[in-house]
Image 1 (cartoon, one colour):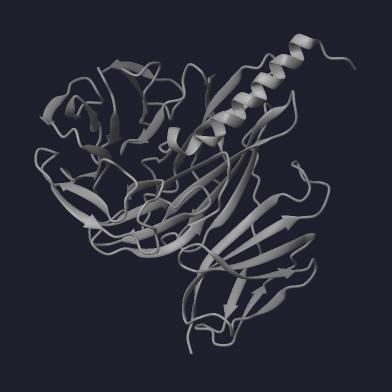
Image 2: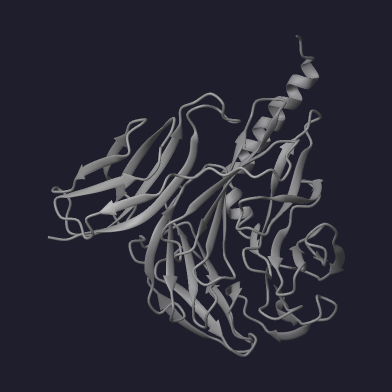
Length: 417
């Protein structure tokens, strides 16, 4: 079958665009993942697929079961509408900022299916509030609205601060002082709706003095924060705090991708999500593959749900998880054993131990059909280590290429002598 020169050129341009766009995706779309108003509810906005003409489509997807299943809510041209999304505290309400242009945003009351456009001049930073209809917009000053964007009240002017998140109590706001990417970060806090603030330095354990990016997400209790720090393009560390960021506890590392990583805290105590998107398929069938990682223990361990977002995607459940895992002894001394429950099936599992700066220090391969592996830890110094277990599919019945990562699991172990 021959392909016309024009069609070949369009495909080359499309592939080049997707690859270049993907390299910068983590900076352009860090709030494309948000919790909804209800328990186990999340929204994701992401590139969906490219059609034969080279047009890239964006989709807003909705889940009420922590990402196990997704329903497609809205399909739009990615070049026209792909704004950041923020969940409201009322069921079905969702903000999209910007909407069609830098000075517009939209509000949906039907779970992201349709949006009513609104206008605000010069939107630089934004976040939804913790009460129904509340929205903060930072342009030439900080503004607060309490009626879904119909009217705003001027709060203050802080041109050196990047608005990040609200707290769990009314009036609480968090900023990070510009320039970003320096450890310790300078975290600004307000409890009077952004009229005044205080700044304190927050040290990110194990992160170098200069890093790529940092994001703040509120938990479910007063003072609870999740902090995500990008240490370059190969290490993404998750921290947790119960005291407004004064002390941070390292939780785990996130699985890396060269396309896109987005994340959000949930409505249920201990719940945290992140999603990893990669470009799958071959021209002319280019589309997104999406892995949703869901934690119930404050981001220490995760379950994994996989979605193949091709042009015919429906909300058929696709669950890709590792068998139950037991790690012993804890703390470990000279050896540590990883034991899987059930039948691993047609998979190989790779277990990697990392130190607290993200450097791999020990690795083992669990062959197909076996359920237990023991690693020798005698050469490792005492302390905490992060483990990552990835499940490599070796069969040929998968909807994506044989040999790619299908599921993963994270955790921490203590080596003590």
